[in-house]
Length: 89
Image (cartoon, rainbow, N blue to C red):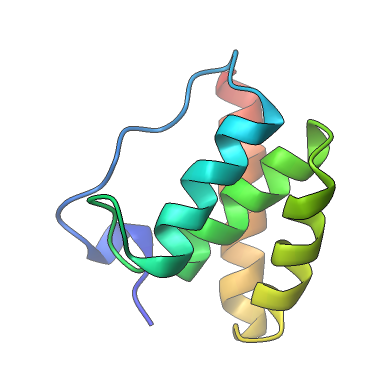
């Protein structure tokens, strides 16, 4: 499984004003490898986590489902990246 630091082409990070729906849609791109995004579960989990924090119930479901497909160190990395994003926002 690829992590965001192993890929060369990444979509720009969402801005601090992004809504839960916008974050969820971006997470969907990374979780499926569509729309120019690489297939990257760590980034997808991070985005679903942020979307859930901004009220997206759908993101909560996808985050839970995705975490069952990931190794625990990948989930931890996604959570670290979400915290880092929040600190910059």
